[in-house]
Image (cartoon, rainbow, N blue to C red; front, side, top):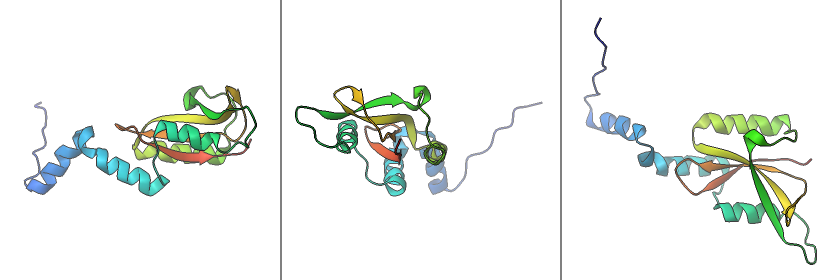
Length: 133
């Protein structure tokens, strides 16, 4: 029995699109565009930390920020609605990593975590879900 090989499409445009889809770097622009379209503005990791920290009220002498933890190791319960949003985002194939960002004063964690995701192959991040604890 001989291995079967599929012949490449004969239409040059279709063939180029097929080749481009196999090269992750070639699809970066489309991933960024789709992530922004589906999840809103994209941010750098520093901007994510600042936006998450800005949800806390100002306290004299306290620095607001955010701690980031991989979603796989996050131990506190995540509400069902946020989990479903995470699953939907994971299924798109747009993101390489998912994190739970928790507002902090220095390193003291507070409430209202966010799920954020890094667009695959880029330094841009999207907000996937937020919830109140």
